[in-house]
Length: 174
Image (tube, rainbow, N blue to C red; front, side, top):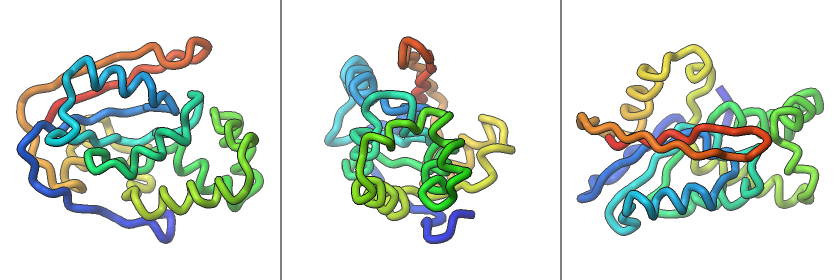
């Protein structure tokens, strides 16, 4: 486990819907467009990201900024873990840069340290569970971490991501 990260958080009850999304990979504008397409209610709905907010896309800092929105929650994904480890271990820094983390080269240390602190304060850490769990087990684990009871509706939204590295952004309604 990454020391200093909170293990879980309990979300308040809401009147709206709870959506889950994965692999934003720095594609803030695409996410906002898709939320508009599904008539996401920012006052009543919430969105939980299952990790990989950062890297590959051009808007990584904007994606981390979502953590400050009252309707957005996230756990750390492997890309956030690479970023965290890369801030302290040179060998991990090169691994992170090779996996879409080259955006870091455009920002001073103070900004990167601030982003690291935001991730530490605002994101629960799943540690090694993410790499060994199946998607359904991981999904149920995240529901448990955030104290959300699932419903039967499932919604999937795909986006093209970055043209040179297409990604699939999945969104589930719980």
